[in-house]
Length: 227
Image (cartoon, rainbow, N blue to C red):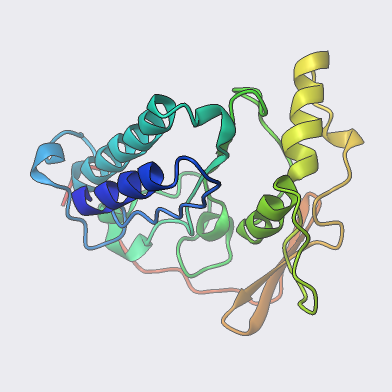
């Protein structure tokens, strides 16, 4: 993590005078877990919690650097995961909570992930959207925010979230209530979920249909902190 964080901070400093795009892919919470000595035994949730603490510290360092360089209010920050917990690894891979399934499934425990967006002065802190979106929406959103058209000749599964980031959040802050019902859905045609090349499930509005059921791992769930 020290090397990853150092490279990220160096990149930001080198490009602070110009527009830049930084993709910081954390390996902390991906098995095999290997938190550094500084963060070992810092969490009651075992090595997974230790790794989460280390990742949280790295995110804080990056955000502090943006503040120190005067870039925070001119930088859109997006934080998200790629999938749910690797259930076969039990306490070493997180917890799916009340959701069903985990990594490699299209049940909600496998595909519903944290998605946090921060941009002071543009997106009100604490705003919450109830729209169903996808990580495929990030690319169209970034291009829309910077005023660049999508490359032509390609079919995109993602849609821009700019209307949510600006209109919905700002209007809800001004009027003090959620206005999702007044906003057009991001994916009016629905979202499609595949297992490899096989269409496995589809979500439309508040409904979801599974065309194929996927087996669940036969594991014994153990409490966090237990190995």
